[in-house]
Image 1 (tube, rainbow, N blue to C red):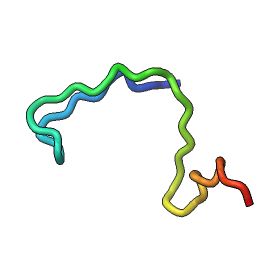
Image 2: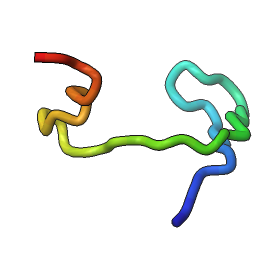
Image 3: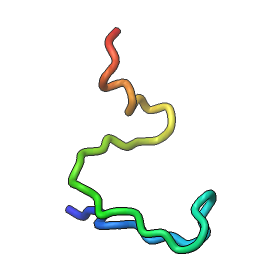
Length: 45
């Protein structure tokens, strides 16, 4: 299984100049296409 250590960007959207974002801690993410219900996990009803 792969994971991100950090992200390096340069002049991307509102980030000016070279930016390094991270290091990231390990976490679990639920991903899927738009409208497929991936954000419904914490809601009731």
